[in-house]
Length: 229
Ligand code: GLP
Image 1 (cartoon, rainbow, N blue to C red):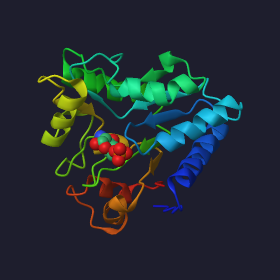
Image 2 (image 1 turned 60 degrees about the vertical axis):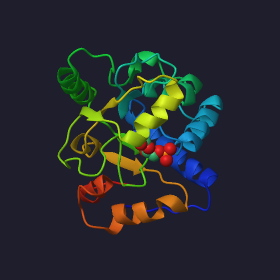
Image 3 (image 1 turned 90 degrees about the vertical axis):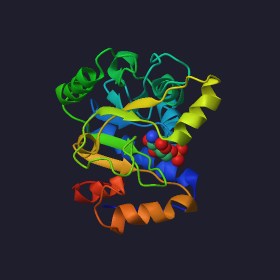
């Protein structure tokens, strides 16, 4: 793993954007894996600035989101797809037909998960997968105890997340499940980039980089990967 330490969030966003820029310079039709969370916002802002100055071209890019809430349409304002659309897609020149996310309204979820994996393969596999990390070491919605061999599948949200959704959605029937890429799906990307900001993530990052490879810290599976930043 290549560990890059920066003094502040702004510098992290810039360094991460540089990695995206290099990727798109090398391969204009790159396949990118994208994520939600607050951590990538600096990166998405930098990419928007670069796109505005015509320094980065998303016109031939394909994207796959890491996860999605179950029970709401992709165009719901609180869907993860809408989040990435607002923070990135709407600010760069990517055709929306090239942007993919698991469909939280799929009738047959296991079948849909298989199709999502197949769509990633058909696109040629993910070149650069962006990841955040939870303080418990989760990536995507692969919480501790998730199989390191897991693939895209349905997962229940933690009680804390359901509580947060109750507040956000303003209803007593908030989303309780997500579809998430699995650990094995994630590590198939050619290059994985994990962003983590602030002291509260320091111990988790140490466990990911230097701790034992264990389902207790799902991100530790990245130690086996040949190209992680
Ligand atoms: C959520 C998401 C993760 C994200 C993590 C950290 O649980 N499922 O994909 O990386 O939280 O979020 P943040 O970047 O806001 O700290």
